[in-house]
Length: 103
Image (cartoon, rainbow, N blue to C red; front, side):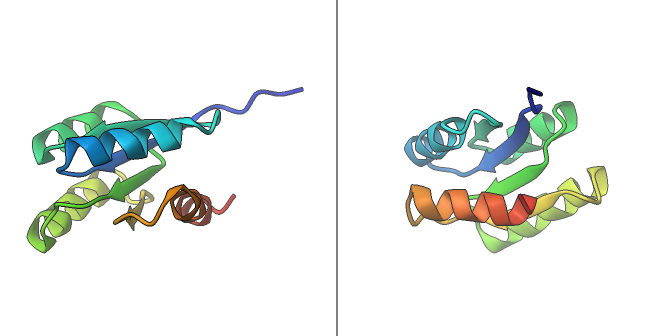
């Protein structure tokens, strides 16, 4: 039996409680490693230090901030998958992640 490596997923949102909940839901999957940040600087720093496969943009980010972050992420990793996740429960979150990762 082979053990698959964990998939690193970055969640960026400005609401601490929502960020904590989303990260908990991500980490409920043994193959996923969710990391949540609540500010743009921390998002850039984490992305530069950890090889993420997916970025989820959450609630609280305005359009200008999302655009700037997407540009930064794609400059660092042109293959990064980015999904806007604004809620909808754990089933939707899982579906969005699986679809983005094409698993």
